[in-house]
Length: 219
Image (cartoon, rainbow, N blue to C red):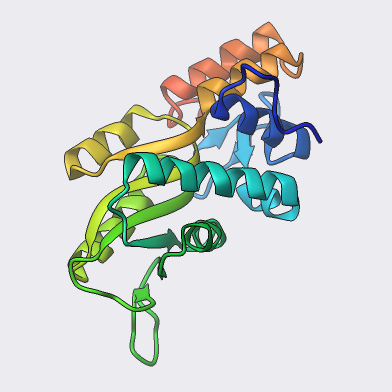
């Protein structure tokens, strides 16, 4: 596998190409996928697949770690969001030689009933790692849990995002810096260049991106 994507390819382009090549992302405008929210979608992204490919896994880990070194040099801990953000977060914490925690979707139903697992240090500066960001709702629940635990959330970084306007607004309103290594617009551009989608597909994919909650709801 050529993970370089060419000398001039950006990190976002390289990840998009890898995701298309190994099947992390699937595109289908004719037989859309259905999300748990009930939204119909022409794209399905399963970042967990990347963990099965050592070269891809290592590249993502290194780029996440390098981004954190550059943008958040004061970081003192890494937190992953359950479940897909946990393995990515562990890899990054190991690369940076930092403590790791993870945030559950809801408090554990027994024992200590924790929602944040790991050693919580008050005012410790933490970066949150997500695999995928859609609307940002679950991500911001995780950052809120860390904040309530007394930790200082510096920002959230994801491997991939759909780039919805709602997500940008939610992070801005919460005053949480958000960065993603790759995104939907770059991926669709790569899919076009590889002739994986037609001009008709592109139009449909762009329409979904503008109003995902309305796309093909009457179909």
